[in-house]
Figure 1 (cartoon, rainbow, N blue to C red):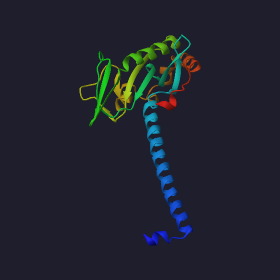
Figure 2 (cartoon, rainbow, N blue to C red; figure 1 turned 135 degrees about the vertical axis):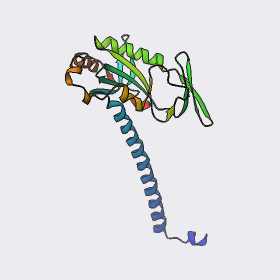
Figure 3 (cartoon, rainbow, N blue to C red; figure 1 turned 90 degrees about the vertical axis):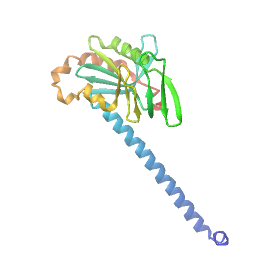
Length: 197
């Protein structure tokens, strides 16, 4: 104890600087890992489309809008993706008002995302004209559905299988959707909810 009290002031400055540097490096590393994970997740979703928009408000026709995580132009038309990053075993069904998540001792519920997805699809259809519009609630690898997936729900690894990458499709396949797609892109706005998710 006496040795610590006898340290000169420059030693304390060096100790504080080393601690600050260690904290800073740790914080940067955590930030980089989160940034890298978000970027990989975004690429996993957007690889399915030839074009995409992320975190937008789609007008609802009544002066407000619906937040949409991803809109993708695919070979089948426009895909609305509601991305969910939920950890644990998820128990949900088409007729259930709430879905339950069990992750070890933690248990919580969230509102069935299907009805919100239907609203988003309807809002996009109102803009798309004749372009087909589909939607999926997509869950990351951190979640599991031990009792099976509800309707219009996918795991992220299945997204590309259901909606093959556009580089495999000739441009003529999607050219017929281009006008409606541009109309959608012109009508949406950046979402204020983008940083809240």
